[in-house]
Length: 385
Image (cartoon, rainbow, N blue to C red; front, side):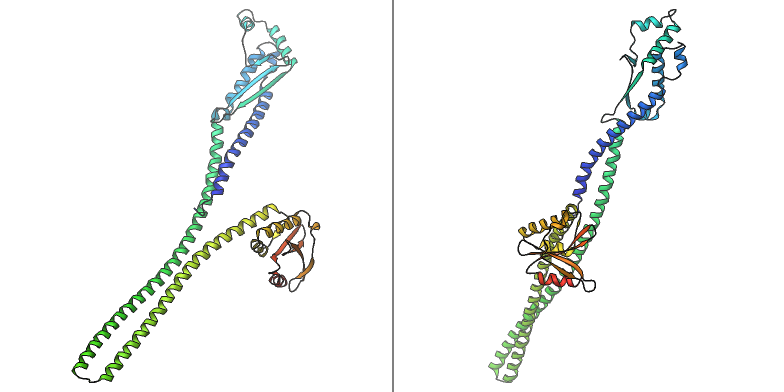
C-alpha cells in the first residue's frame, strides 16, 4: 500500500466527472450552433414554389427540416433529441405545425387558391423567420454515455500506468529487503551452529575431565604413579576448556552485535524513508509556491534541520526573495567558488539563522540555509562551489 497511487485515484475520480460535464456542455453548445446554422441555410428550400403558391410555406419548412434531421448520420446513430422551432416575425409559430380549423378549410378539395397561398407565403417571408434549435442531451443518452466511457477509460489507463510503476518499485524494494534479511539470517544460523559446536565440545571436555578425574582418583588410590603427568594433563584440558569458553564469549558478542546492527538498520531505514518523504514534500511545496526562487539540495536539507520557529522565519525570507528581492536586508557579501568567485549574499533570520543566496537573471537561487553553529561548515561549502 506504500506505493499505491492514492493521489492518482483521487485525481481521476475528481477530474473524470468534471471533464465529462464540461465536454457534455461543450458538445451540446457546438451541436446546437451547428444544426441551427445548417437549418437556417436550408429550411426554406426552393422559394419559387412558395412564390407561385404551389405549396404552403409551413408544409415546405416542415418537409425540409424533417429531411435535414433524417439524413444527418449523427442524429440517427446517437438518437439526438433536437427541438427545432421556426417563428414568424409577429410571433406566430410556423414549425412545428399546429393545424387549426383554417388549415383544414384551406386544404379541403376545391378550395385551394394558389394566389392566396402565394400572397400568404410572401407575407410570411417578408415578415422574417427566426429559427430556434435546442439540443436535449441528458445524462444517460448515447452521446453522454460515450463521453463518460471515454474519460473513464482514459482515467483507468492513467491509474493502470501509475499502479504498474508503483508495483515495480515496491517489488524492487521487497527483493532488496528480502536479500538483506536472507544474508543476515545466514550469518545468524552460521553463528548459532558455531555456538552449538562450542557447547558440544565444552560438554565433551567436561565429560573428559570427569573421566580423567575419576581415573586419576582411581589411580591415586591404587598407587600414586605418574601423579605429575596426570596433573599436567588436567591443567592442559582446563586451559583448552578456558580457550573454548573465551571463544564462545567472543562469538556471543559477535552475535549480539549482529542483532544490534540489524535493529539499527531497520530503525535507520524507517527514519531515512520518513526524512526522504519530508524532503520531497518540502521540495515540491517550494517549487509550487515560489516560482522565482530555486532551492538547492543543501538549502532544503538545512531547512529541514531547523526548528519550527526558525523554519517560519526562513520561509518569510524566501517569500520576500520570491516577491521583492530588493526588500531583503543583506548583512554582507560572501564570495563563493574557487575560480569564478561568484557573489553570494548573507541574510539573517530568527537571530541565529543564516541564509545565503545568489541572484540570477529572472531567478534567485538559495544556496545554503543554516544556523550560527553550522556557519563554519556552510562557509567552507560556499568556497568549494
